[in-house]
Amino acid sequence: MNVIAIQKILREFAEERDWNRFHSPKNIATALAVEAAELLENFQWLTEEESRHLPKRPEDYRAVREEIADVQIYLLRLADLLDIGLEDAVRDKLGKNAEKYPVALAKGNALKYNRLGK
Amino acid sequence: MNVIAIQKILREFAEERDWNRFHSPKNIATALAVEAAELLENFQWLTEEESRHLPKRPEDYRAVREEIADVQIYLLRLADLLDIGLEDAVRDKLGKNAEKYPVALAKGNALKYNRLGK
Amino acid sequence: MNVIAIQKILREFAEERDWNRFHSPKNIATALAVEAAELLENFQWLTEEESRHLPKRPEDYRAVREEIADVQIYLLRLADLLDIGLEDAVRDKLGKNAEKYPVALAKGNALKYNRLGK
Amino acid sequence: MNVIAIQKILREFAEERDWNRFHSPKNIATALAVEAAELLENFQWLTEEESRHLPKRPEDYRAVREEIADVQIYLLRLADLLDIGLEDAVRDKLGKNAEKYPVALAKGNALKYNRLGK
Image (cartoon, rainbow over all chains, first blue to last red; front, side, top):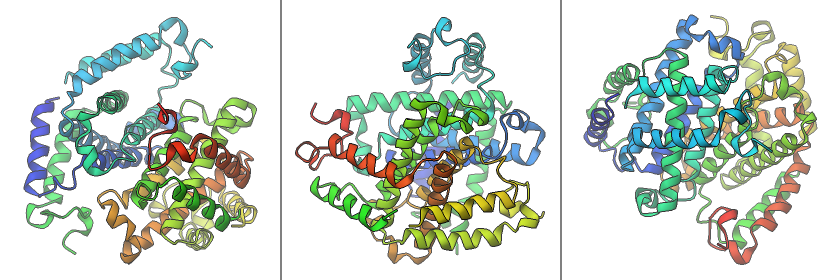
């Protein structure tokens, strides 16, 4: 994904519409949480099994695809506003996760890391 | 961002830990919304102005960077599970947004698109 | 539940701590959404069936009880700040819901009301 | 608020529509988080100051009143499903909060309790 190019589009989109005064990191983090909940809404009455077969429900699938895009867009915007490199942040976190959830302890176990091994 | 490479790491991470049974799209969408709220939590008592200067608060800045990574990770995982191309979904949505928010109507106005022009 | 009495306690709690400047309705609505996500976090890796037996897991049950209280507290505070009568608002909504989801159409069907009957 | 009476209405509402199979605590906690985000959506582009004057915007005010009701309804339902006394849970939490946020330390300070006094 061309993060830099999309962030540039988003920045110009906001500037052209004079939206920067609304785009404080606080407000964008709020909008992101709202979009993540709208994404979740599509799953709320499905069983887990049904959710695994979402691609077979074209209307729901399209809605989910669009909400995923909305979340990604606000995430790109927020990272840009705060000057955070998205891929670097992800790779650093992947390293941390590998330490927090060693295979031997985490296998088949979804407990939060701080309860693992207790 | 190398979406395919990171999704591969995440897929293997889940497989090694036997986590696929927990990773229904429904559960991942839930985890994503929870992480988005944890990200938001860092901003909840800040003013908008303070949030614009977050990089000057190293402890908060580091926490936000990590939560942004968590949201991105679950988003990559969800897109992979549902076989949704993340960049394509974003670009399609950017096209829609340009139609929904024409500069002439949206300038300086944060109303939701369906109330614009009323 | 003695809504008025609890709202009075919350109001005085905020005043004594000089917290009213933080307690804009916007910030309280944010804190409420964050607490609702923390409540949800307790369920995210449980199956639906496991969630029905939560009372048998004392540690999780206690955590859920406390998060439910947090959500209720912010809801009471927000309603107070906006001068909204909580019970009246609930009863009005129950009336609306009875209209939106007639038994004949809604039976065994969790579709959102605007898709019912299509 | 007559918690018992409203919970009875909600229980019968679900039974008549054969919705109990959808109403696992996990799903209700999800619906609650989604509603809390919809409530928050009404505030996302407002300044804090504007949010304090929400009652002067009749359309937004009505929408917020309805979302507050939705959150309260799911909270009542969840407490009922898990056999948690709502008022007792709130009063226990108020006692804890008084301990966690002593006036001397918390005055004018919105830091999370575990960072207070550091």
